[in-house]
Length: 617
Image (cartoon, rainbow, N blue to C red):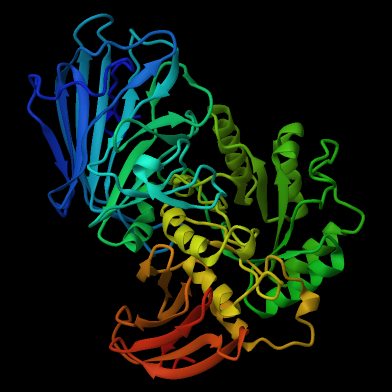
């Protein structure tokens, strides 16, 4: 890999005391990198050979002096560093994702590479790169290949985030856990990423980006006053002769919805697409079937008539999922898999099948996925995928590549969250790592938590929330309709707990919203929102806009349509029936960008709008 394409490292011994007085003699002048728009800045300096950085936004300090270090298991790197060179880089471009929340993503940054050298001991070379984007800043460690460094065992990464005050944080310690809003000083350890913080004037996200294949996922623990520090979720990291860590990302915005809009920053910090041919990767809407042939065919008929793309067989289709003897290249007697595949294919519908790690690791995965391709299966949903250690990540990346080899799209459950891998391997269309509709509102996932998740979790990118419609857990169907827009997911699982026999003989005209709704977009905007209270998201495909609003408490909310372009639009509004919360009423009106819709929603309800230029429908 070319030198300038690599990211660079800085190391200091873990035993260095983070509270060392910063008034000591500064050995070098400060190096500051600012974003192209000048709003974000990240600065670096050495203090007596020890590395510190700080972050500001629009001139206001976000992170005070925070130490950077890595610890080896067998020995510690000396702290006596000197800068032996620097390099400046910049880029101004856009790139087009295979699937995305926008047609193209901006990818512009300024970069400063700091080249360090030990003055004592082994005199190893260490580098660090800082990048500043309009969406946030990032830094990364790299140990380049060199004679003084052989096989490496990394005991811990100790990247600090020293905040300027005791901010509120939206904390969860498990990817499918309920969020808690607490002060930084009250936060427990083992926080997931991304971590969302609320200050008096800004919103901040700490995230992880780039490849984790040779690394362990990050968690965040508290350190000192108003501080966080990175730790591995489990184990240590071993590499042969060089190390490139994932990026540590700090995003800042005036409104929390902007952080959600800017989720593509994690992809910008990831490698470009590794696949030569992506024409087979198709996003779409999915309906889960019962584990028999007739149910799948009934869903295929609905999918074909209503612009859905996939039917799904979940756990149990090849036998009891926790039974190590269940062979993933067989199927149960109730399923005639060749018949289902052919029936679906004749109607333009693909089949996605579940496979958990027990089966993935026990049987030859190459043979399994080759068999699926031969059968005509179009995608796989990984279950029980471990997500904590370096070996977990090596297994997951290998499985993703093998799925791509056999042209299988991928949905990852249960606890993995994206770090930009969907840019490198766009067959990864969605992941869970989210407390979705599997948890009922009255059993741990009330609307307030959904409205925290829609901000905090979605900074990481696509989230498989699994909306449903007729299941008994549904309190407001208008709420469920809106979820398809609020939660971005190129593979959108709808009707998760519904079955086709619930729909037979019943008319639900409002489901035209899901019928017309795509799952990838040309533009996406968080129109308004307050964490835990309400959120309105607008997404555009071609000339049509889809708008979803969800709320916690009863409210009369004004929804501005200023995002619309020129011209007049026909708005079909799907709103809660005031006489029966589960019912949805449809109204139509002509609007333009000056119009503000007035939406009345009861507690835990929602509101959806489909807008097309007048005369196109």
